[in-house]
Structures are given as structure tokens and as C-alpha cells.
Amino acid sequence: MDVFLKPKEAKTLLPTDILFQTVFWSQVKARLGWKALAFDFSSSSLRGDVLVLIRALGNDIKAAYVPQGPEFGPGPDDYGLFLEALSDAMISELEPEVAFIRYDLPWESHYAQDIARGERSAPPEARLLELRMNFGTKSWNLRKMATNMTVADTYIVDLARPKEQILQKMQPKTRYNIRLSDKKGIRVFPAPIELLPLFYELYRQTAVRNGFYLCEYGYFLALFSALACDPDSAEVHLLLAAKEQDLLAGAIITISGKTATYLFGASSSEKRNLMGPYAVHWAGMCLASSRGCHTYDMGAVSPIQDPT
Image (cartoon, rainbow, N blue to C red):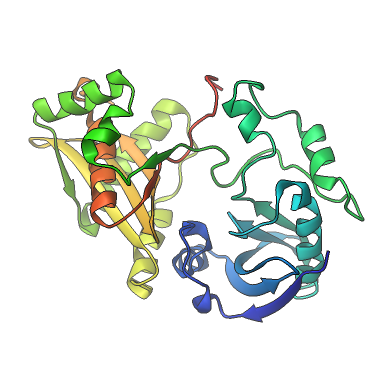
């Protein structure tokens, strides 16, 4: 398989529903120390573009990272062949210090349908994932990373239906909690950037309570400063839920194309019985629907009932 690349400026990336492949995301990451590159690519059956991020790792070594890209890929049987050809074409366009190219792919896993049908409880071990991805390649040089930098499994809510139908598709307990938050007088409102420190305090509480990695405050500032640089590439919405003067929950929701993404969420360690997070999610879905979105990406959601 042959893949041909043509470098271009990141600001000329094509519009996409994938937030992490937008001009906006290139601006966010540039503010956080990454160098943003972009390429048009073509093969016998595929054509598109891709955002590539470069960062120094120390000792004169750099990494190239493709977040949730390329958007368009081949059929599952050709995943590895295409990635090998794309990487071979890309490496000649990158600095010699780049030691590897990392992909967090947006394509459906080889095993997703097996899991959905209940035929498999989880993807196989990394060794078998590598075997399947490398089948047919020339160098067998594709490796499964131990961790994911973007979400590997998610849940997508279909917004192309009336609100009552969206609610009806939910678990009864979820519907109950959404309606309970309304009865309890929870108010969800779009917050200005000046209230970002209040959201960050909720986020800090959430990270400590659940053992999450805590992003620095500057990461959140980068989201909103990048938006000011390129307001047409994506939308960023800060939602806060409150009961009178008490902040209960919050979310940062982005919109790219026809997809809304629940990017960050947070909730107070107090008054959790008021169901603030449910109110925020429902408000986010309603906001996304009003902005013409077809889908609401819930973020990291395990495909199976596994606490780990």
C-alpha cells in the first residue's frame, strides 16, 4: 500500500467532528508546548488530512503524536497496512530527532462488535492486539501502548430525536435523577471564563476523590485562549450547576461539526444527593441539540461492567 503526503499549515486543516483533529486543538496544544504540523494524505482508496503534534521528551528525543486521527481509515483488515504506509511517508517529513509516531485511533476496534454482542468481555491482551494489527505489514513494527492519551471507549448519545425519546432511552434511574435535580431546584447556567477557577476547584475535588490525574489549571486556560484565536473552528462551553449559592457540578463541553464532546466534568464532594452531575449532563445534551449537534460523546465510558 502506498500513501502520499503533502505538508500544509495546521490552520488549513479540514473541518471535522473530531475535536482532536481541528485547527482549534492545534492551537490548544501549541499553548501547552507542542508543535503542530498538518498533512494532506492520499492513497488508492483514501483521501484526507491529519494533525500531527510534536513534543520533546529530553535527551534530544522527540515524539510525534496523532490524536484521534486520521479521521478516515481503511477497512479493519487493512488497518495495519495503512498505518505502516502512512508512518513511512510521514517519517521523511519529520525531524530526525523523532523516535516514534504514536496514534490514538478513532476507528472502531477489531473487537468492538464482539464485545457489543457479549461474545467477548474485553479486548485481548496487548500481544494479540499487536499480532492482528501487524498482520501483512512489512516490518511488524506496530506496538500497543500501555495507556491511552485520549478516550479509548465511549458512549454516544443520539441527539437526532425529540428530548422525550432521548430520556426514554436512558436507564430509569438516570431519568429519575435528572428529574430529581430539577425538582430540587438545581440551576444549570452557561458560565463566563471568569468562573473557571470555581470549576477548577470542583475538578480538583473530583480528581482527589476518585484518584484521577489532575491537569494543571493552565490546561483549561489554553482551551479558552485558543478559542479566542480561532472562534470558527470549535465551540467551548463551561456549564455550572448550582443550588442557590452552592456550586454542585460543572462540565466543559466542546462542539466540533455535528458532535458535542463531554471533555471535562467535575462535582462537589458536598450535597451529592442533589444530583448536580445529572443536571449538567442533561443541560449539555440540550445545549448540543440546540446547536444542531447529532451526537453527544459521553467521554470515557467502559464498554463492560468493570470497576477497573
